[in-house]
Image (cartoon, rainbow, N blue to C red; front, side, top):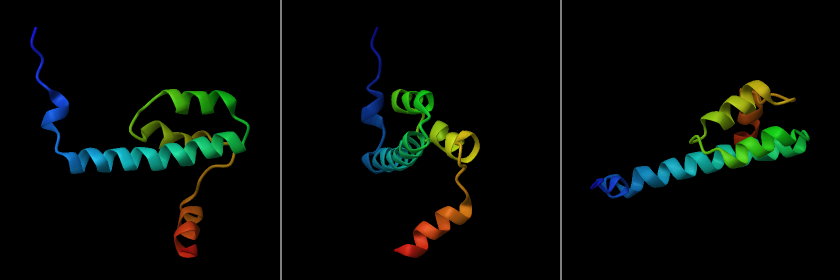
Length: 79
């Protein structure tokens, strides 16, 4: 069977933006899981690639110390 080259059809800029989006959320989630000693979440977040969806759900819902919008705003105001 001949499958079309799917990656060749996606323009580079949107692909790069998806990569950066995923990388930011994955980094935040992995850092929070490690800091909270949540080993199972750390492994799941490390192995599964969900384009930031699982990471966002973890940070805002399942983390021992949930991420809040006020906390995110404080990060932005520091810079």
